[in-house]
Length: 112
Length: 115
Image (cartoon, rainbow over all chains, first blue to last red; front, top):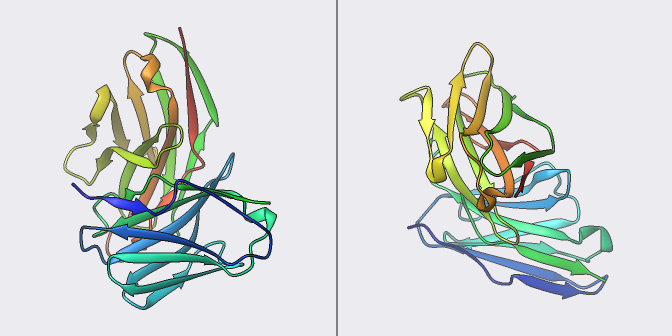
């Protein structure tokens, strides 16, 4: 069974801090995604990666960057955290288009 | 470009009643369609998927969905709601080759089940 593991379930940081959210998948999937989820707005795609060292902006990339140095790991970076980045962050992996995505349990991030 | 519309951000039913969650999509090519469920403080889990084998798709926990091309719909149903079905439900679409493989999600529908 595919496992997507996010490093933290809950995280509290201060404004201006650099924040790293880590995600690891164990199914050798090429594609990995970072979403943020806010009430009433559903899932919004921040960045995705279709291969090692390859990344593409999603719908809301501003204030975020990503890193994919190894196939199994996809990191989301908040360069200088702000209170409007308080949210639930979900990581997902995908093998091919006709397959469903596999999601981690999410990281609930609070920026104070 | 693909898009997904879920009608109703909240749906409230009584335990034992029919559950109907609506999803309409637009896609430039025949789509792959998915329903996911999210329980509180968890990630999304796959309920069912449509990939063209059959228009009526059965999923886990007694849910099923019917693909209607003429209506561009993929509504989710369950004959009898259970308290444990209370969760957030998301419909998603991704295109076949020739379109975008990046899934697009609806905004979600929160299912509330009353005793």
